[in-house]
Amino acid sequence: MKPIVTLTLNPTIDSASEAERVRPTHKIRTRNERYYPGGGGINVARVIRALGGTALPAYLAGGATGALLTDLLRAEGFAATVVPIAGVTRISHSVYETATGQEYRFVAEGPEVTAEEWRRCLAAVGGLDFDWLVASGSLSRGMPVAAYGELAALAAARGARFVLDSSGPALAAAVDGAAAAGGIHLLKPSLGELTALVGRPLDTVAEQEAAARELVARGIGIVALTMGHHGALLADAAGATLLRPPPVEAKSTTGAGDSFLAALVLALAGGSPLADAFRRGVAAGTAAVLKPGTEVCHADDVARMEEALLAAE
Image (tube, rainbow, N blue to C red):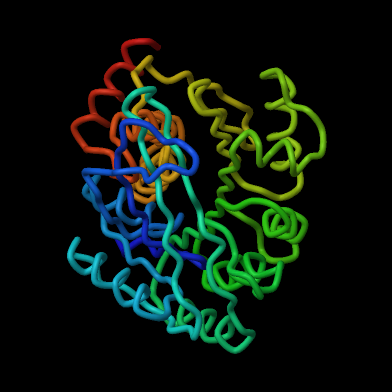
């Protein structure tokens, strides 16, 4: 199986730490500082690797922080395709408040990307050999809103499968252009992202299923809707399925959606039936919340969650 290529157009260095309490104006003393390579596609690649698959992360990076991002990935054993940019790669930070169990997340907006840098990114992705291309995360400032549509067309031209996890105008533009661009094989919105996309409340399972199936009717092959502790809903031309996760004590919800997507795509790329791949995705998303900060899920936790899901069927 070829490596699954993951693309991150606005990557970050994710720092995580703990403090007893987070209070305004006070100097907050933190401990247990950790640094991880981050951003949607990079997180997906890290989970694919943790679950025994092979992924090739591609991303834009610049400045001293961009070099650090690449060093962090190399330390985890990744070869990567890096598109240099003039801007400085962002740093995001999360603090776990031990007194309350609350998590505070500070997410930087990131650098601005020029049209020439975006063209170089497209060329770099076009030069890679893949059957699956996973684009996950936000666009960098300055990028065309139709960027993901261009990537879908690139994947379709070579018969590869395009997977998208994004939000806002970039998501809307990709969905609107799905048919013209050759289609999106798999779309993974969160409930909030899907609600914003369709422009109406989605308070019930019936409403959520109807919205997901509308996207399928518009040319999306598979819609995998994630809903936090309420589980996930999978829709395709054959129908829709809701899967509730096993009850667990969550330490952090950061990266749960990326873990879900990584496990789902890895299973599909390996030839698993859609129902089995979906269960694997829910198991990975659940396992991810057992870990603090942006630490990726562990394969043994995923297996344990999958066994719990099978037992509940």
